[in-house]
Length: 85
Figure 1: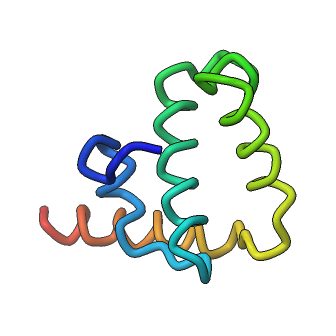
Figure 2: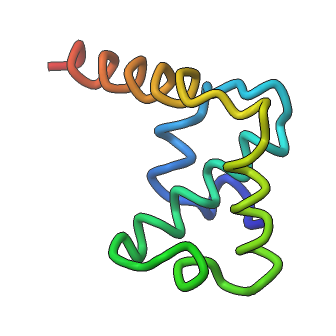
């Protein structure tokens, strides 16, 4: 997994996400980067190798990953951007 500074827009977008484990937060950023680079690709093609593909599936199956928290972080960032205008 790359550093957050290498992650591009997703590191900024999800900077304040809290999935209860910093590794999950980092995995979210990595996955969002991969999927935004190849939005039409299935998971196994968007990921760079088999290990990352397995990690993606583990992420999606992890009971600690809360879709509501991911969306809440995105909404907070959207509100901040809108308030700037």
